[in-house]
Length: 155
Image 1 (cartoon, rainbow, N blue to C red):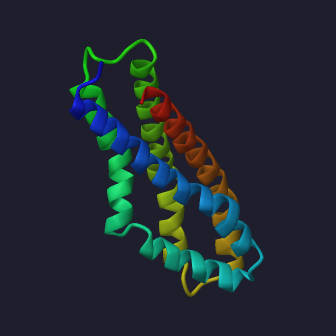
Image 2 (cartoon, rainbow, N blue to C red; image 1 turned 120 degrees about the vertical axis):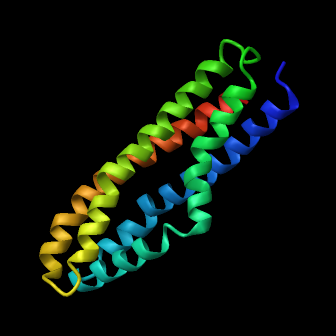
Image 3 (cartoon, rainbow, N blue to C red; image 1 turned 180 degrees about the vertical axis):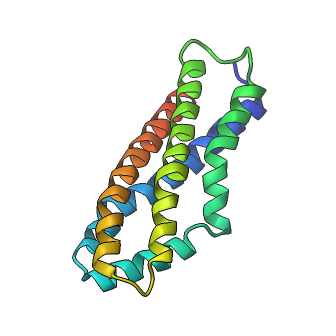
């Protein structure tokens, strides 16, 4: 039986991870396909603006919360988790940390390169950015979706 504190952290983990997964999935299935139809100039301008706005305070709460809350649930519940909840919680943490590593090592450097290319050749900038960014984004979206399912299982 989990303590009230552990249960609260786990419920908050599911909510925050679900919200974060929703943002990732929305970009994957709606925003990026819509942007793909734009001209190179329109695409690069739009992605530059997104990249300026996304790391705002509310996004950072989600970005950090998907790691902090499951970690809190894991440590407040040491010895309380059963043979399903414990491994599911650890698996979810592995997934969100791996997703953040993809973001930090893959997506952010591409975002930075796109930002510095402003005023240059938009076609070349897009070609260097879009396919790689989409691949990294697919990976991190899959990881956070799996994490959300694992957290729901742990609950």
